[in-house]
Image 1 (spheres, rainbow, N blue to C red):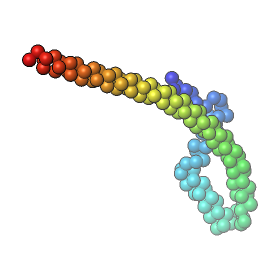
Image 2: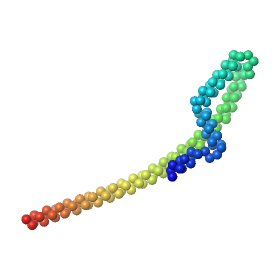
Image 3: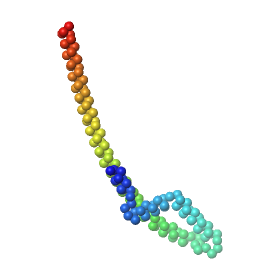
Image 4: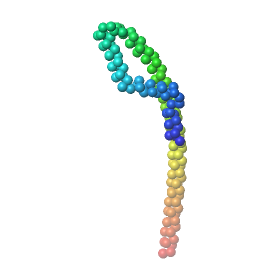
Length: 142
């Protein structure tokens, strides 16, 4: 039951959540970092060394494109993080409930063991009394 609840928390509910998770996964990868670094370096190289460039230094067009990318990816990543936070809170709540149930079970076991310990002590006392009675009876018969 708990496993199914955790699985249910992890499933994106709609297209927006799926898209946010996918964007966060892509943008948060080393592949993306390497590709973006390569693209920026290539852009700077081409626009610095070739004639007839479309974006001369200080690379205003590149800055605009990178700003647009940041303006859209940051909120999308935050949406994915908010969903992950909700998942984490749900899992923490399930962990808390599981711990409460487990604690109750442990308390019940401890009580049962204590009761059995008391019963064993009572039986040990009775056995000692019976031994004394037998010893007295055997001394009286002799």
